[in-house]
Image (tube, rainbow, N blue to C red; front, side, top):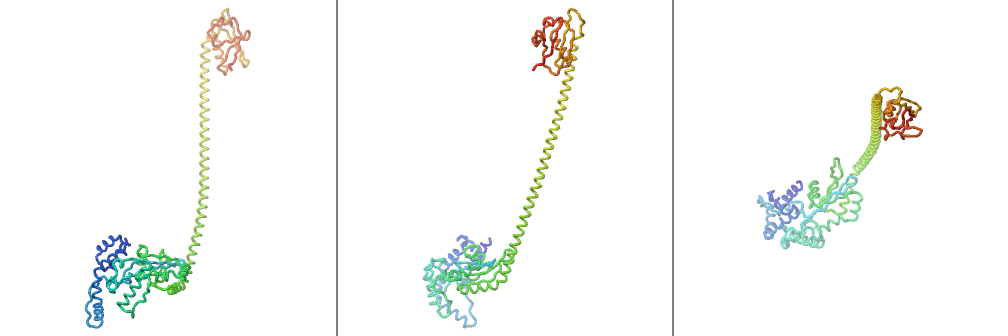
Length: 439
Protein backbone atom coordinates (compact mmCIF):
# COMPACT_ATOMS: atom_id res chain seq x y z
CA UNK A 1 0.00 0.00 0.00
CA UNK A 2 2.86 2.36 0.76
CA UNK A 3 4.37 1.81 -2.68
CA UNK A 4 1.05 2.75 -4.35
CA UNK A 5 0.77 5.92 -2.24
CA UNK A 6 4.35 6.90 -3.06
CA UNK A 7 3.79 6.47 -6.81
CA UNK A 8 0.53 8.42 -6.61
CA UNK A 9 2.22 11.33 -4.78
CA UNK A 10 5.17 11.29 -7.19
CA UNK A 11 2.85 11.30 -10.22
CA UNK A 12 0.87 14.24 -8.80
CA UNK A 13 4.08 16.20 -8.12
CA UNK A 14 5.35 15.73 -11.68
CA UNK A 15 2.11 16.21 -13.60
CA UNK A 16 0.57 18.90 -11.40
CA UNK A 17 -2.75 17.04 -11.30
CA UNK A 18 -4.48 17.54 -7.97
CA UNK A 19 -7.33 15.06 -8.41
CA UNK A 20 -6.10 11.84 -6.75
CA UNK A 21 -8.88 9.77 -8.32
CA UNK A 22 -7.84 10.88 -11.83
CA UNK A 23 -4.18 10.16 -11.06
CA UNK A 24 -5.12 6.75 -9.70
CA UNK A 25 -7.06 5.94 -12.89
CA UNK A 26 -4.12 7.02 -15.10
CA UNK A 27 -1.63 4.95 -13.11
CA UNK A 28 -3.95 1.94 -13.00
CA UNK A 29 -4.47 2.18 -16.77
CA UNK A 30 -0.68 1.91 -17.19
CA UNK A 31 -0.32 -0.98 -14.75
CA UNK A 32 1.10 1.38 -12.07
CA UNK A 33 4.22 1.81 -14.20
CA UNK A 34 5.25 5.31 -13.09
CA UNK A 35 7.56 6.03 -16.05
CA UNK A 36 5.05 4.78 -18.62
CA UNK A 37 2.22 6.83 -17.08
CA UNK A 38 4.35 10.03 -16.96
CA UNK A 39 5.62 9.50 -20.51
CA UNK A 40 2.06 8.93 -21.80
CA UNK A 41 0.78 12.01 -19.96
CA UNK A 42 3.61 14.30 -21.10
CA UNK A 43 3.32 13.05 -24.69
CA UNK A 44 -0.37 13.96 -24.78
CA UNK A 45 0.24 17.34 -23.13
CA UNK A 46 3.20 18.16 -25.36
CA UNK A 47 1.18 17.57 -28.52
CA UNK A 48 -1.25 20.35 -27.53
CA UNK A 49 1.28 22.86 -26.13
CA UNK A 50 4.23 22.69 -28.52
CA UNK A 51 2.73 25.02 -31.14
CA UNK A 52 1.78 27.72 -28.63
CA UNK A 53 5.15 27.46 -26.96
CA UNK A 54 7.07 27.91 -30.22
CA UNK A 55 4.95 30.89 -31.29
CA UNK A 56 5.35 32.65 -27.95
CA UNK A 57 9.05 32.05 -27.24
CA UNK A 58 10.09 35.63 -27.96
CA UNK A 59 7.03 37.04 -26.20
CA UNK A 60 7.96 35.03 -23.14
CA UNK A 61 11.47 36.48 -23.19
CA UNK A 62 10.06 39.97 -23.35
CA UNK A 63 7.61 39.27 -20.57
CA UNK A 64 10.35 37.85 -18.37
CA UNK A 65 12.54 40.94 -18.94
CA UNK A 66 9.65 43.34 -18.38
CA UNK A 67 9.00 41.78 -15.03
CA UNK A 68 12.52 42.64 -13.89
CA UNK A 69 12.50 46.19 -15.34
CA UNK A 70 9.01 47.54 -14.60
CA UNK A 71 7.09 48.23 -11.40
CA UNK A 72 4.86 46.67 -10.36
CA UNK A 73 5.31 43.25 -12.04
CA UNK A 74 2.39 41.70 -13.79
CA UNK A 75 0.92 38.62 -12.08
CA UNK A 76 2.31 35.43 -13.59
CA UNK A 77 0.03 33.13 -15.51
CA UNK A 78 -1.23 30.00 -13.78
CA UNK A 79 1.51 27.43 -13.55
CA UNK A 80 1.20 24.90 -16.30
CA UNK A 81 2.76 21.50 -16.77
CA UNK A 82 5.93 22.96 -18.32
CA UNK A 83 6.57 25.32 -15.42
CA UNK A 84 5.92 22.57 -12.83
CA UNK A 85 8.32 20.26 -14.58
CA UNK A 86 11.00 22.95 -14.57
CA UNK A 87 10.46 23.48 -10.84
CA UNK A 88 11.39 19.83 -10.16
CA UNK A 89 15.06 18.97 -9.41
CA UNK A 90 15.16 17.09 -12.71
CA UNK A 91 12.29 17.41 -15.13
CA UNK A 92 11.19 13.85 -15.87
CA UNK A 93 12.77 10.96 -14.05
CA UNK A 94 12.87 8.18 -16.61
CA UNK A 95 15.55 5.88 -15.21
CA UNK A 96 17.91 5.39 -12.33
CA UNK A 97 20.95 3.49 -11.24
CA UNK A 98 22.01 3.00 -7.64
CA UNK A 99 24.91 1.76 -5.65
CA UNK A 100 25.10 0.97 -1.96
CA UNK A 101 28.44 0.18 -0.40
CA UNK A 102 29.75 -0.56 3.08
CA UNK A 103 32.75 -1.84 5.04
CA UNK A 104 31.70 -3.63 8.26
CA UNK A 105 28.24 -2.21 8.00
CA UNK A 106 29.17 0.82 5.86
CA UNK A 107 26.99 1.11 2.77
CA UNK A 108 27.06 3.12 -0.37
CA UNK A 109 23.76 3.75 -2.13
CA UNK A 110 23.46 5.43 -5.47
CA UNK A 111 20.46 6.02 -7.65
CA UNK A 112 20.61 7.62 -11.05
CA UNK A 113 18.02 9.30 -13.13
CA UNK A 114 17.86 10.16 -16.76
CA UNK A 115 16.81 13.61 -18.03
CA UNK A 116 14.56 13.35 -21.05
CA UNK A 117 16.57 14.51 -24.01
CA UNK A 118 13.78 16.65 -25.37
CA UNK A 119 12.91 19.69 -23.23
CA UNK A 120 10.71 20.95 -26.05
CA UNK A 121 7.83 19.41 -24.14
CA UNK A 122 8.27 22.04 -21.43
CA UNK A 123 8.72 24.95 -23.87
CA UNK A 124 12.46 25.50 -23.65
CA UNK A 125 13.30 25.39 -27.37
CA UNK A 126 11.67 25.62 -30.73
CA UNK A 127 13.88 22.95 -32.17
CA UNK A 128 12.23 20.39 -29.95
CA UNK A 129 8.99 20.73 -31.88
CA UNK A 130 10.50 18.82 -34.74
CA UNK A 131 11.02 15.77 -32.59
CA UNK A 132 8.40 13.09 -32.90
CA UNK A 133 6.19 12.27 -29.90
CA UNK A 134 7.44 8.72 -29.85
CA UNK A 135 11.01 9.86 -29.49
CA UNK A 136 10.17 12.36 -26.78
CA UNK A 137 8.64 9.73 -24.55
CA UNK A 138 11.28 7.10 -25.19
CA UNK A 139 13.02 5.63 -22.11
CA UNK A 140 16.69 4.69 -22.05
CA UNK A 141 17.89 4.12 -25.60
CA UNK A 142 21.00 2.64 -27.15
CA UNK A 143 24.32 4.40 -26.65
CA UNK A 144 24.67 5.66 -30.22
CA UNK A 145 21.13 7.05 -30.39
CA UNK A 146 21.50 8.62 -26.92
CA UNK A 147 24.73 10.32 -27.95
CA UNK A 148 23.09 11.77 -31.07
CA UNK A 149 20.16 13.06 -29.05
CA UNK A 150 22.46 14.58 -26.44
CA UNK A 151 24.35 16.48 -29.16
CA UNK A 152 21.06 17.68 -30.71
CA UNK A 153 19.86 18.89 -27.32
CA UNK A 154 23.11 20.84 -26.65
CA UNK A 155 22.90 22.45 -30.08
CA UNK A 156 19.21 23.38 -29.60
CA UNK A 157 19.87 24.75 -26.11
CA UNK A 158 22.78 26.96 -27.31
CA UNK A 159 20.72 28.18 -30.26
CA UNK A 160 17.77 29.17 -28.08
CA UNK A 161 19.55 30.43 -24.95
CA UNK A 162 23.06 31.22 -26.03
CA UNK A 163 26.43 29.89 -24.88
CA UNK A 164 27.40 32.49 -22.28
CA UNK A 165 25.74 31.03 -19.20
CA UNK A 166 24.79 27.37 -19.30
CA UNK A 167 25.63 24.02 -17.72
CA UNK A 168 28.60 22.12 -19.09
CA UNK A 169 26.54 19.52 -20.93
CA UNK A 170 28.44 16.46 -22.16
CA UNK A 171 27.83 15.56 -25.78
CA UNK A 172 27.25 11.89 -25.15
CA UNK A 173 24.57 9.58 -23.86
CA UNK A 174 23.59 9.64 -20.22
CA UNK A 175 24.75 6.08 -19.64
CA UNK A 176 28.13 6.91 -21.20
CA UNK A 177 28.47 9.92 -18.89
CA UNK A 178 27.40 7.87 -15.91
CA UNK A 179 29.81 5.07 -16.77
CA UNK A 180 32.70 7.53 -16.62
CA UNK A 181 32.39 7.24 -12.86
CA UNK A 182 30.79 3.89 -12.16
CA UNK A 183 32.97 2.04 -14.68
CA UNK A 184 36.23 3.78 -13.85
CA UNK A 185 38.85 1.15 -13.02
CA UNK A 186 40.26 3.16 -10.12
CA UNK A 187 36.81 3.94 -8.72
CA UNK A 188 35.60 0.36 -9.10
CA UNK A 189 38.71 -1.09 -7.45
CA UNK A 190 38.45 1.33 -4.51
CA UNK A 191 34.76 0.64 -3.98
CA UNK A 192 35.13 -3.12 -4.23
CA UNK A 193 37.94 -3.10 -1.68
CA UNK A 194 36.25 -0.90 0.90
CA UNK A 195 32.49 -1.11 0.50
CA UNK A 196 29.56 -3.42 0.13
CA UNK A 197 27.64 -2.10 -2.86
CA UNK A 198 23.97 -2.10 -3.74
CA UNK A 199 22.28 -0.38 -6.69
CA UNK A 200 18.62 0.26 -7.32
CA UNK A 201 16.35 1.92 -9.83
CA UNK A 202 13.49 4.24 -8.90
CA UNK A 203 11.48 2.38 -11.52
CA UNK A 204 11.47 -0.56 -9.11
CA UNK A 205 9.77 -0.69 -5.72
CA UNK A 206 12.93 -1.08 -3.62
CA UNK A 207 14.85 1.70 -5.34
CA UNK A 208 11.84 4.01 -5.20
CA UNK A 209 11.42 3.42 -1.48
CA UNK A 210 15.12 3.99 -0.83
CA UNK A 211 15.12 7.26 -2.77
CA UNK A 212 12.17 8.50 -0.71
CA UNK A 213 13.69 7.27 2.55
CA UNK A 214 16.95 9.11 1.84
CA UNK A 215 15.07 12.14 0.47
CA UNK A 216 16.90 12.12 -2.86
CA UNK A 217 16.20 15.30 -4.83
CA UNK A 218 18.74 15.03 -7.69
CA UNK A 219 19.94 12.08 -9.67
CA UNK A 220 22.23 10.23 -9.97
CA UNK A 221 22.09 9.97 -6.18
CA UNK A 222 24.73 8.31 -4.02
CA UNK A 223 24.48 7.70 -0.26
CA UNK A 224 27.04 6.25 2.11
CA UNK A 225 25.42 4.52 5.04
CA UNK A 226 26.48 2.26 7.83
CA UNK A 227 24.62 -0.12 10.08
CA UNK A 228 23.12 1.30 13.25
CA UNK A 229 21.20 -0.21 16.13
CA UNK A 230 17.85 -1.95 15.79
CA UNK A 231 18.53 -2.91 12.16
CA UNK A 232 18.61 0.73 11.05
CA UNK A 233 21.14 2.60 8.94
CA UNK A 234 23.03 5.81 9.66
CA UNK A 235 23.55 8.25 6.76
CA UNK A 236 27.20 9.30 6.57
CA UNK A 237 27.29 11.20 3.28
CA UNK A 238 25.14 11.78 0.24
CA UNK A 239 26.19 12.90 -3.19
CA UNK A 240 23.68 14.25 -5.69
CA UNK A 241 24.17 14.77 -9.39
CA UNK A 242 26.89 13.54 -11.73
CA UNK A 243 30.41 13.43 -10.30
CA UNK A 244 33.75 12.52 -11.81
CA UNK A 245 35.63 9.47 -10.56
CA UNK A 246 38.15 11.75 -8.87
CA UNK A 247 35.43 13.68 -7.02
CA UNK A 248 33.75 10.49 -5.90
CA UNK A 249 37.06 9.03 -4.70
CA UNK A 250 37.75 12.16 -2.67
CA UNK A 251 34.34 11.92 -1.01
CA UNK A 252 34.65 8.22 -0.33
CA UNK A 253 38.18 8.52 1.02
CA UNK A 254 37.16 11.38 3.31
CA UNK A 255 34.18 9.46 4.64
CA UNK A 256 36.37 6.43 5.29
CA UNK A 257 38.92 8.53 7.19
CA UNK A 258 36.27 10.36 9.22
CA UNK A 259 34.42 7.17 9.96
CA UNK A 260 37.53 5.15 10.77
CA UNK A 261 37.14 5.42 14.58
CA UNK A 262 33.50 4.50 14.32
CA UNK A 263 34.28 1.63 11.98
CA UNK A 264 37.04 0.34 14.25
CA UNK A 265 34.68 0.51 17.20
CA UNK A 266 31.99 -1.16 15.11
CA UNK A 267 34.43 -3.89 14.10
CA UNK A 268 35.47 -4.43 17.71
CA UNK A 269 31.86 -4.38 18.83
CA UNK A 270 30.88 -6.80 16.06
CA UNK A 271 33.81 -9.06 16.93
CA UNK A 272 32.85 -8.94 20.59
CA UNK A 273 29.26 -9.77 19.70
CA UNK A 274 30.43 -12.65 17.53
CA UNK A 275 32.68 -13.92 20.32
CA UNK A 276 29.88 -13.59 22.84
CA UNK A 277 27.50 -15.30 20.48
CA UNK A 278 30.02 -18.08 19.85
CA UNK A 279 30.60 -18.42 23.60
CA UNK A 280 26.86 -18.57 24.20
CA UNK A 281 26.51 -21.15 21.47
CA UNK A 282 29.30 -23.24 23.03
CA UNK A 283 27.74 -22.87 26.46
CA UNK A 284 24.34 -23.70 25.06
CA UNK A 285 25.80 -26.71 23.25
CA UNK A 286 27.53 -27.87 26.45
CA UNK A 287 24.33 -27.32 28.40
CA UNK A 288 22.30 -29.21 25.82
CA UNK A 289 24.83 -32.04 25.85
CA UNK A 290 24.75 -32.21 29.67
CA UNK A 291 20.97 -31.98 29.62
CA UNK A 292 20.73 -34.74 27.03
CA UNK A 293 23.12 -36.89 29.09
CA UNK A 294 21.04 -36.28 32.23
CA UNK A 295 17.88 -37.03 30.32
CA UNK A 296 19.45 -40.19 28.92
CA UNK A 297 20.47 -41.31 32.42
CA UNK A 298 17.06 -40.46 33.78
CA UNK A 299 15.44 -42.29 30.90
CA UNK A 300 17.67 -45.30 31.50
CA UNK A 301 16.88 -45.20 35.24
CA UNK A 302 13.16 -45.08 34.52
CA UNK A 303 13.49 -47.92 32.03
CA UNK A 304 15.39 -50.00 34.62
CA UNK A 305 12.75 -49.26 37.24
CA UNK A 306 10.00 -50.15 34.83
CA UNK A 307 11.83 -53.36 33.87
CA UNK A 308 12.33 -54.32 37.53
CA UNK A 309 8.69 -53.53 38.23
CA UNK A 310 7.60 -55.66 35.28
CA UNK A 311 9.86 -58.53 36.36
CA UNK A 312 8.61 -58.30 39.97
CA UNK A 313 5.02 -58.21 38.78
CA UNK A 314 5.69 -61.19 36.50
CA UNK A 315 7.37 -63.13 39.30
CA UNK A 316 4.52 -62.33 41.65
CA UNK A 317 2.03 -63.38 39.03
CA UNK A 318 3.86 -66.66 38.44
CA UNK A 319 4.13 -67.30 42.17
CA UNK A 320 0.46 -66.66 42.59
CA UNK A 321 -0.36 -68.92 39.68
CA UNK A 322 1.88 -71.68 41.12
CA UNK A 323 0.28 -71.27 44.51
CA UNK A 324 -3.16 -71.42 42.99
CA UNK A 325 -2.08 -74.46 40.98
CA UNK A 326 -0.81 -76.16 44.13
CA UNK A 327 -4.02 -75.34 45.92
CA UNK A 328 -6.02 -76.70 43.02
CA UNK A 329 -3.85 -79.83 42.91
CA UNK A 330 -4.19 -80.34 46.64
CA UNK A 331 -7.89 -79.79 46.42
CA UNK A 332 -8.15 -82.17 43.48
CA UNK A 333 -6.03 -84.73 45.32
CA UNK A 334 -8.15 -84.38 48.43
CA UNK A 335 -11.26 -84.70 46.36
CA UNK A 336 -9.80 -87.71 44.63
CA UNK A 337 -8.84 -89.31 47.92
CA UNK A 338 -12.26 -88.63 49.27
CA UNK A 339 -13.77 -90.12 46.16
CA UNK A 340 -11.52 -93.19 46.43
CA UNK A 341 -12.30 -93.56 50.08
CA UNK A 342 -15.98 -93.35 49.35
CA UNK A 343 -15.55 -95.80 46.50
CA UNK A 344 -13.63 -98.23 48.74
CA UNK A 345 -16.30 -97.94 51.36
CA UNK A 346 -19.00 -98.55 48.82
CA UNK A 347 -17.14 -101.56 47.42
CA UNK A 348 -16.49 -102.95 50.89
CA UNK A 349 -20.15 -102.63 51.68
CA UNK A 350 -21.03 -104.33 48.40
CA UNK A 351 -18.95 -107.38 49.45
CA UNK A 352 -21.06 -107.97 52.53
CA UNK A 353 -19.97 -109.99 55.53
CA UNK A 354 -17.17 -112.54 55.06
CA UNK A 355 -18.79 -116.02 55.03
CA UNK A 356 -17.77 -118.83 57.30
CA UNK A 357 -15.85 -121.85 55.94
CA UNK A 358 -17.96 -124.30 54.09
CA UNK A 359 -18.21 -126.39 50.94
CA UNK A 360 -19.50 -123.45 48.91
CA UNK A 361 -16.93 -121.05 50.23
CA UNK A 362 -13.76 -120.23 48.29
CA UNK A 363 -10.53 -119.15 50.06
CA UNK A 364 -8.69 -116.50 48.04
CA UNK A 365 -5.12 -115.20 48.73
CA UNK A 366 -4.03 -111.95 47.06
CA UNK A 367 -0.41 -110.83 46.95
CA UNK A 368 0.39 -107.14 46.23
CA UNK A 369 3.49 -105.78 44.45
CA UNK A 370 4.84 -104.39 47.73
CA UNK A 371 4.78 -107.88 49.24
CA UNK A 372 1.64 -107.45 51.30
CA UNK A 373 -0.68 -110.49 51.35
CA UNK A 374 -4.38 -110.39 52.00
CA UNK A 375 -6.82 -113.28 52.06
CA UNK A 376 -10.59 -113.58 52.36
CA UNK A 377 -13.36 -116.05 51.99
CA UNK A 378 -15.97 -115.61 49.28
CA UNK A 379 -19.03 -117.53 48.23
CA UNK A 380 -18.10 -119.60 45.19
CA UNK A 381 -20.97 -118.06 43.33
CA UNK A 382 -19.66 -114.48 43.42
CA UNK A 383 -18.03 -113.12 40.27
CA UNK A 384 -14.44 -112.19 39.54
CA UNK A 385 -15.59 -108.51 39.83
CA UNK A 386 -16.04 -109.14 43.57
CA UNK A 387 -12.33 -109.94 43.81
CA UNK A 388 -11.45 -106.59 42.14
CA UNK A 389 -13.84 -104.79 44.48
CA UNK A 390 -12.12 -106.44 47.43
CA UNK A 391 -8.65 -105.33 46.23
CA UNK A 392 -9.91 -101.78 45.63
CA UNK A 393 -11.53 -101.61 49.08
CA UNK A 394 -8.19 -102.30 50.73
CA UNK A 395 -6.66 -99.09 49.38
CA UNK A 396 -3.21 -100.58 48.98
CA UNK A 397 -2.74 -99.63 45.35
CA UNK A 398 -1.82 -96.24 43.90
CA UNK A 399 -2.48 -97.40 40.36
CA UNK A 400 -5.95 -97.78 38.99
CA UNK A 401 -5.09 -100.15 36.18
CA UNK A 402 -4.08 -103.64 37.24
CA UNK A 403 -4.98 -107.29 36.69
CA UNK A 404 -5.39 -110.34 38.92
CA UNK A 405 -3.23 -113.20 37.69
CA UNK A 406 -2.67 -116.84 38.79
CA UNK A 407 0.76 -118.41 38.44
CA UNK A 408 0.23 -122.08 37.81
CA UNK A 409 -1.16 -122.19 35.28
CA UNK A 410 -0.80 -118.48 34.43
CA UNK A 411 -4.22 -117.09 33.89
CA UNK A 412 -5.06 -113.42 33.63
CA UNK A 413 -8.52 -112.66 34.94
CA UNK A 414 -9.20 -109.55 32.94
CA UNK A 415 -12.22 -107.68 31.64
CA UNK A 416 -13.55 -110.61 29.66
CA UNK A 417 -13.84 -112.77 32.82
CA UNK A 418 -15.28 -110.28 35.27
CA UNK A 419 -18.76 -111.83 35.03
CA UNK A 420 -17.60 -115.43 35.68
CA UNK A 421 -18.16 -116.91 39.09
CA UNK A 422 -15.24 -118.10 41.15
CA UNK A 423 -16.33 -121.65 40.59
CA UNK A 424 -16.68 -121.17 36.84
CA UNK A 425 -13.27 -119.59 36.67
CA UNK A 426 -11.69 -122.61 38.35
CA UNK A 427 -10.78 -120.74 41.55
CA UNK A 428 -12.91 -122.89 43.91
CA UNK A 429 -12.27 -124.13 46.61
CA UNK A 430 -9.14 -121.99 46.94
CA UNK A 431 -6.96 -119.75 44.80
CA UNK A 432 -3.74 -117.78 45.00
CA UNK A 433 -3.61 -114.62 42.91
CA UNK A 434 -1.20 -111.71 42.61
CA UNK A 435 -1.72 -108.17 41.46
CA UNK A 436 -0.01 -107.29 38.18
CA UNK A 437 0.17 -103.59 37.41
CA UNK A 438 -0.56 -102.59 33.86
CA UNK A 439 2.31 -100.81 32.07
